[in-house]
Image (cartoon, rainbow, N blue to C red; front, side, top):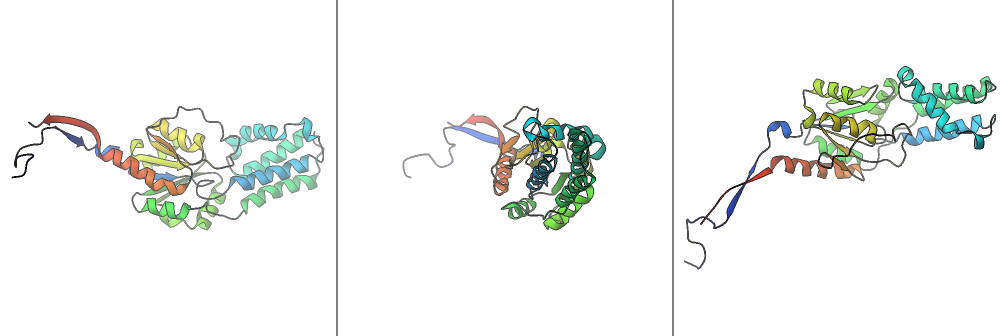
Length: 273
């Protein structure tokens, strides 16, 4: 017999056994945000804001008026009444315009502002690069839920035109994205928070509330972000959160978490000799 270990004798080293996680630690549901995660959205709102400033600028000196911040204040005050989306934006623009012009704005220009909201509601639905392939790849391994926030009719239209509706087992159009809303979504899906991963562009809406529940989240920043969404008060948790550059990276990140979930808690059980 060649020099070395004798046949039938154990290796003179410690053996390491990896314990599998409980089933409750596995990923059982993956959620995707819609606006600026799957399809472009904020650019159309930003264009509307620029046109709004041009209209109001015919009445007041914009250099002396923080119009964008004034509008944001009105929008926030109206969220509980109008909700999120283009309709609430347009109504808030009308209210802000009347205020800052001290009611001097004409009916014609108010109509122009209303038309800005209609233009946003009619905007084309264009998927972000690599989104379709990434979503389909994830759907091959996990059940998917779309969790999108905003006006019901507008979101339904975007879901339909996206061509992705058949990939999702559930589509949840919600009025707010907070821990209570996500908890309700998970309850309807029969999934625990620790079994859920949410993917989106907003730390405030897609990441913080899911981490608060004990779930995991993937943040994919978008170049444009509404000021309201830019404010997020939470502590990042590297073990349960990842930041990626594009949707194409999502399948690999889920594989990493899956591997960590399947092989974890190393326990040394003895040594040979």
